[in-house]
Image 1 (cartoon, rainbow, N blue to C red):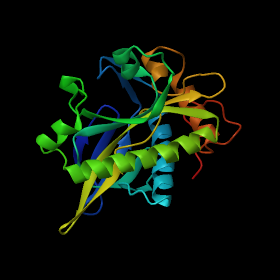
Image 2 (cartoon, one colour):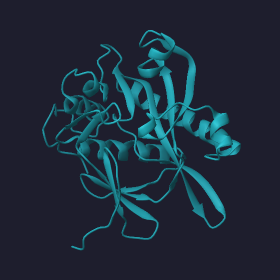
Image 3 (tube, rainbow, N blue to C red):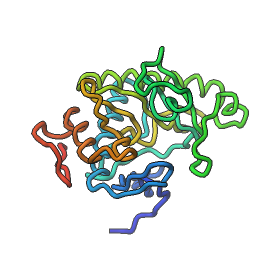
Length: 253
């Protein structure tokens, strides 16, 4: 097999040159990081779970008319995606106070917000991904006003979808972050959901017990991250219902 060309390696994923022009192969690593890389570990099977869960969510979004970069899953750790021009922003949607918002505003963690709130952070690990207002985004040319209107609309639609799916399996969607990319077709540009959607990029709490089922388990040393992600996958039907935890999860094709 020919050696693939590495395009980019991040904290949780690797991008390789794809088999066709305009495509990448996205590989999900087992690495877990927190605090912009200050805390690190390798969680066996995490990449397998995130690959399958991201496929589940991206496919669901496409089915309701929200475009994504996802084409298809290739194997247990890899998926084929469209090459996109990433807008250098993390788009954060919050339904309940948690994390940095709770700390900034002195809110009780878990307090419901009056409505979903969309925030933006500038993607730069060295700067700590600082929050930025729309005025900065437009002034620095990262996105136009029309882009921002479309991004907010898309983010709220993603929130409606994810909230409903999670509620149906007894999970509260506290908040999540997505990335948005541009795909060009000659002179026509469209925005798509890119990167991944997984427990790495969401806060997920059990509705009844409040148990955390996301990366906060790793951040706060609350137990087994693999068990938490496996539970999310099991409830969503990505894993067989009788699975609790296996170091190398068996996934449904």
